[in-house]
Length: 454
Picture 1 (cartoon, helix red, strand yellow):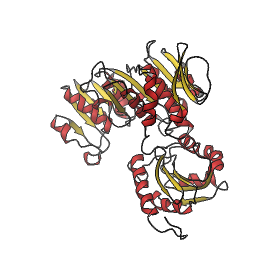
Picture 2: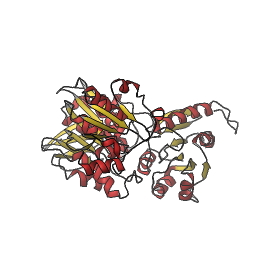
Picture 3: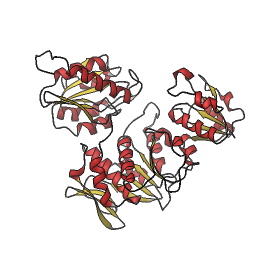
Picture 4: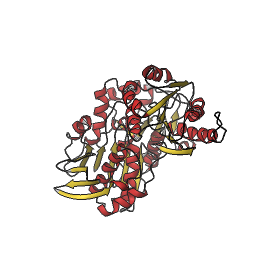
């Protein structure tokens, strides 16, 4: 079969490698040149890949029987529109891998918390099962995970709305929808389109599967209740009926009328109400997958969290510094701020994705002592917070970091939680968080201007 892979990022690379390994005739295209790609094409070219750089021409469709779409490649492009017009099947990389994988699948989506929940669920399953593979939007592409899989394999997949747009038959045994809040307005002109994309995680489930969703989030509940599978809401509070809930400082799961202890809240190693919700969803999913309840709390206690997600990167002179670079929308920032009582110096900025800046003001007034704006979005931050809190603005994060640390006094917290994409200055949010960590380390080793020790 002749396959065209559209977009050669991590997912496209995995899809092309899988197609080549299966003996297909594979061509690929990208708007970038080979030199600018984040992946090296030489191994795939040695397998027979035909790469067409800096083009998305519909002429590439000649003789093509299937188009495999990378999540970053827009379905609205001329290439994809022409493929659909010609009747050429267009599927996403997740769908492509699913058609060739063996085993069971737990899939996680949501506007925020996907990576933490996916990683935690992977560790919970690993406490009971031997072959557990986590990836998808996080880490390894699904296409690169399936080699050697068996009926006993568990895949734990983080899925973005972009990936869910292009599924057809993909059916997870367990599907989790953590939350839905505004994001990716640059891709979805209508908020309803984004909501529907998230809800597609439940699209193909049947009565033997589980749909886990946030009970007190009307948008998530609306999508979850459409599922044909067993509905299992989760809620940070008391709840009737089947679901995961909190009562008497303990997390419980009620399934088929039977109530079972998941974990004591003191076992949760990560701060913030949002991380409690992530743990509720992950532990409920693990139980649905057959993990004995007594294994959950030990695995939860051992969980260290992920880099760039409210990650404590330094302490100096009574000041704590947190890297929350993964917070690329306003709702993620609100969740981070909920973990603090007062004394926060909040760093906001980057490449604006259409963040609802005004929604941050009440929570920032509650717990922040200053706002530090940086990057291309700094003027939007300035407009939202002018007259609300002390406000400082810098062209780059590198300039802003030592100044934010200089403002901090004992008992304060410096929090990088930008509410923006990173692409104005950095390769990705990981690069931004790594650089921030480096700049913090360098800054606290220098003498402070006020004479105090760093």
